[in-house]
Image (cartoon, rainbow, N blue to C red; front, side, top):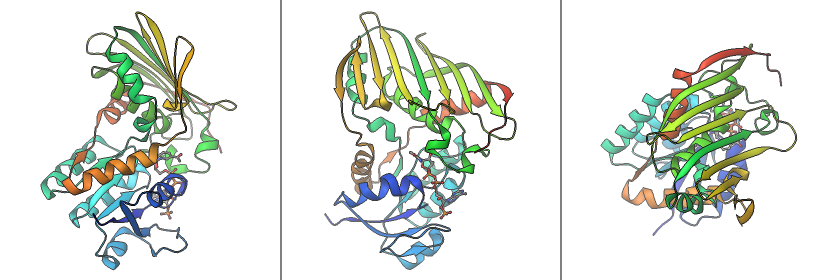
Length: 308
Ligand code: NAP
């Protein structure tokens, strides 16, 4: 089969760190051009916006959207209306309704739509799901504490409305737990701390239950310097499973079971290559629903202003 002719929109940190290497290593894709308001890419035709790019390259069959969430819907809608398949960075949108709109549109136009959840492609996620499926669980706790200044240097969009704040990394943890746990989760309580000068939270504590009563709690923090923590602890009747390093490592009762190099983005592009020929939809909304519910249900507090 000929390689899928691909365009990419939003040349920023994640496009350069992960998308370009994953695309270049995958023979199913041929990256034809990029669109970004300011950035260009050496050796590739670069356009200011998606409309210019698609007009200049009618051969583009699919577009990978790597912009922040606030501009995703408008771009994705335009691409689908232009008859091309769409792959979107996480979170799939700044609101729930706009993502539903894209799913409906992709179905109507018979086009592939992939809302990527890169953390679900971490190597320990499937082994953890299999371990969990054979057990009765007692509780689950997520600790996701990282340093926004290190991972998002100068990215003001994360602090703007729709930028999700600490849920930008936290939604990765939610994407894992909604994939490995057997039942849907319901948000019970949340506390969200907003810096006095920002429109999105810097810390969040969440208390959820699955529909069978399993307690699931989460602690998201965005000012952790030093060692970073991306852990999920699952306590069963006969042991404790810990996913650490965002799902790259797994231990049971403290004994290491698996530790692999992170390979998330190659996995995402392998999946997209499967979806395109059959116009498949892979757009699980569960992580975004939980974030929306935390904003709906959460108690808000104002904390110290945040400055880079
Ligand atoms: P980024 O470095 O700010 O890059 C995004 C690029 O999108 C910008 O450089 C900008 O390029 C373009 N853009 C288009 N519309 C924009 C707008 N309204 N505001 C700001 N930029 C806009 O961000 P990123 O870290 O790559 O993150 C992009 C997406 O990937 C986010 O949804 C994020 O959650 C996700 N992601 C990021 C990481 C990470 O480690 N950073 C990891 C996984 C997923 P132009 O100015 O040239 O248009």
